[in-house]
Amino acid sequence: MAQVLTCGAAIVTLSMGIRHGFGLWLQPITQAQGWTRETFAFAIAIQNLAWGCFGIFAGMVADRFGAFRVLIVGCILYAAGLAGMALSTSSLAFTLTAGVLIGAAQAGTTYAVIYGVVGRQIPADKRSWAMGVAAAAGSFGQFLMVPVEGFLISGLGWQQALLTLGAAVLLIAPLAFGLREPGFAGGATPARDQSIIQALSEAFKYPSFQLLMAGYFVCGFQVVFIGVHMPSYLRDKGLSPQVASYALALIGLFNVFGTYIAGTLGQRLARRKILAFIYFARSVAIAVFLVVPLSPLSVYAFSSVMGLLWLSTVPPTNATVAQIFGVAHLSMLGGFVFFSHQIGSFLGVWLGGLLYDRTGSYDVVWYIAIALGIFAGLVNLPVKEAAIRRDMPEGALGNAG
Image 1: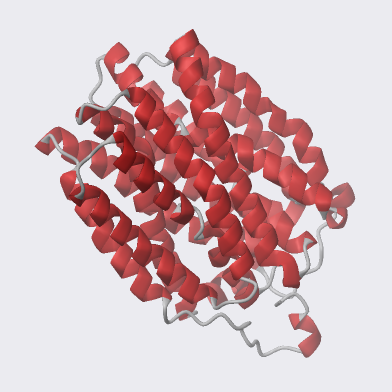
Image 2 (image 1 turned 90 degrees about the vertical axis):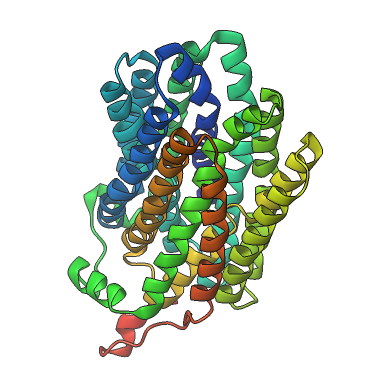
């Protein structure tokens, strides 16, 4: 168990840590290339959508053949995407590399794949906690990597900084060896009680799965809009770039605690209530942030609160999917839930750039984020967390907890 958590956490730290800093490149790249903010935002929006699309198939492959192969391919794509992002001279090339390539890479190196391994290797009575640990690692990656990325940009320039990160992300390959699963040794495929089609049909007919997907859509909209556009929002308001870097780092630092606490509480409390609280609290935090006078102190306070709520939705959402449907197809089902998250991410980052270019302000998108938080809190309350009952022999339900 220790090896799985250590290697999984290290991979998520690196993969998620790099992506959380992409907002720091918005102004350097658009100014150097003469592009609008919408051009950059659209590429990152495509990245999130590609992440969601490829995540479904990455989950299917990981469930069938194990996570190791998926992680190796993912880290190679990540390095290629970062290099392409640095060397692109047209908006199309930038969208294909920063968008499609990195999106596909993230699908194979982040939560859906890692959580599939965790779900299969960690006992049910510790699963939510273990997922909290993995999510906290991704948050620590943001705290660790965002200041590093800011330092690389200022010290090396934005292009060399991206190439340096492209080399660093290849460290995922040796870490992947620690996540090889015994059941997949020699290319073997573990026996399953359901086919992929049966598992998908069951999940999409189940109302609670649909509600979890709706809530995760909102999560994606909020966090990616804030992560990508808040640095520029703060600079537009006259605050220094260092404030934005510290703000994103604080989100990552406090998210370490938020995700761990959410995962731990998910072992004892109703996860639907945890999720509802998180979404309601996000709306309150955003509303207060917009009302109080803007200053470095208010930014740091907002970032700390949002950090506690940032990815704390991840452990209870994925643990609930595992509890309802079992772990045999967990990576795939988690991939579909995450696809909904990424549709929200696409809209959050793209609308942020589009509405800014059209109105000269991010205000409308902030208001949308508040309203969606209230919606997500309400739709999570009716979720049923109990294991689904299937019309098959009792022994076939062995993985349902």
